[in-house]
Length: 145
Image 1 (tube, rainbow, N blue to C red):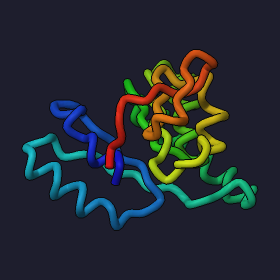
Image 2: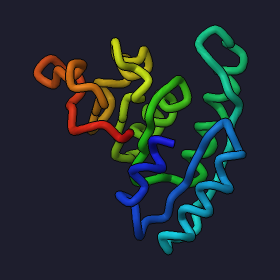
Image 3: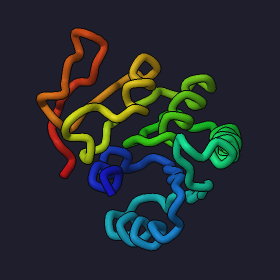
Image 4: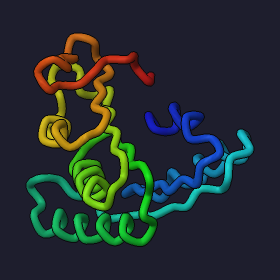
């Protein structure tokens, strides 16, 4: 949902959405059509968290395949393990990378955000008190929601 709020930033671009939840696709298609965007491409991958090691491995392989198949110029994520994988793989393939830490992380940066910070070309938080770009942390440029 947070990425949908900033989707005007990629007007005129070919967009690939990758998520664990295919039910988002109908809403994204509707939003894209309302704004006369090019119809986006959709990919899904298995949901996983850090305690589900086998599922994490499957997720990593699926995300690797998605990125190798599409070769994006940019990878933008709002977080979690899948976003970490996508950003790291995207960076290895030459994509520019943007990490927008989820609005849900109001007390501290997400674990994925902390780990990916040194690989992101642009590292952002949606909470002003969590910004610390002078020490390798994220920038604050406002909240999406």
